[in-house]
Length: 111
Image (cartoon, rainbow, N blue to C red):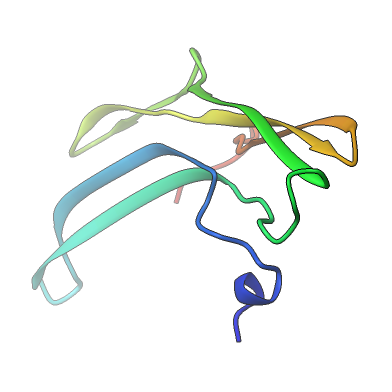
């Protein structure tokens, strides 16, 4: 049994697709094959509690205005968007805000 089933989690409440890129390339024997990169930010939430116990409100998501841009010798200048997701939640009457994001560090080297 997966941890998702154990935790009573349904499909994500929000998904922000940051990058979905595909390109042909060659392996070391010069065989042509396809490479695909997909990057998402995702927010999950429990669904096994009654509304009086747990309630989700105001789900928001957006890409940042400033993103990672770099030069590729074969594809030219590339911009990889990143973003955030937030949700307001009530747990037994107490208000919470959850935010998720994925940031690159300035010293990160793409390989």
